[in-house]
Image 1: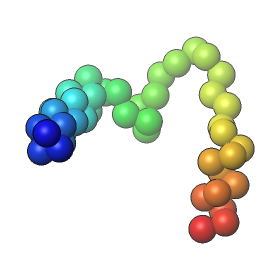
Image 2: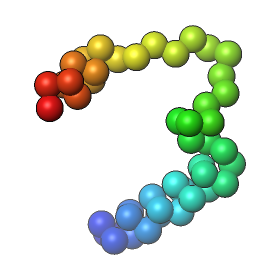
Image 3: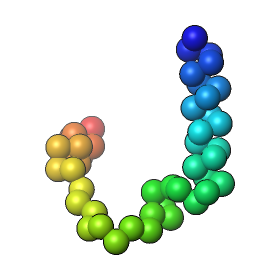
Length: 45
């Protein structure tokens, strides 16, 4: 089942890239707010 999930996830990621749905290409009118909890844990690492 894990192999099936990984295969599906790879196809989904490829579809997102083909549609331009990546964080670098984000186009949204909603203000983006960073999550301080995740930022703090990234700084500690």
